[in-house]
Image (cartoon, rainbow, N blue to C red; front, side, top):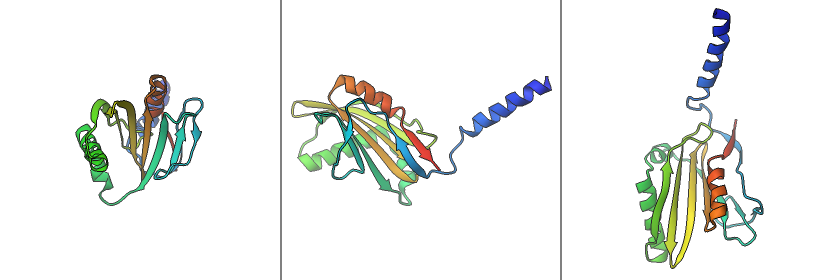
Amino acid sequence: MKKKLLPLLALVAVLLAGCGPRLNDHVTDYHIDLPAGFEEIEMEGVDACWANAGQTSKVNLKLTAKTGATDDAFQNITADVARDTFLSAWEESYGARPVLTDRYFTRDPVCGLPAYQYSYVLEWEGRQVTQILVSINADKTYAFSYNTNDKAVLKEFDASAKNIQLTIE
């Protein structure tokens, strides 16, 4: 009985060790699944951008250096805070607020690192776009933004956002 129990306990210990907080958060690479036809393009203000042929759907990555207050601020993000911040910035830029309808907000970790996922539908001047934001608190803040008005692409974006892979040193 003991011979059978020891390997099982060792396996449980290994699995539980992977569930704890990461001691290292240095990301050396990342991978996201993109729908067929998406290619990397240049876009000002982001670190990476991929778009489909008609550029009706895009995925962006913005890396931001962390400051001493980043971890506390990151932990305090809620759907209400994210929505209010976005709406205020939009109003400052465009002079009016769009209609924003939440799809979901979660705090599911990504590769064991603190993260949040916020998705909403934005309506502005008769147009509608769905955005998924995945923000990950690592050695830097990794913010992936998926934008589309195509329902088929949205399904693939939802799956991609749930499967972001980070290589951590």
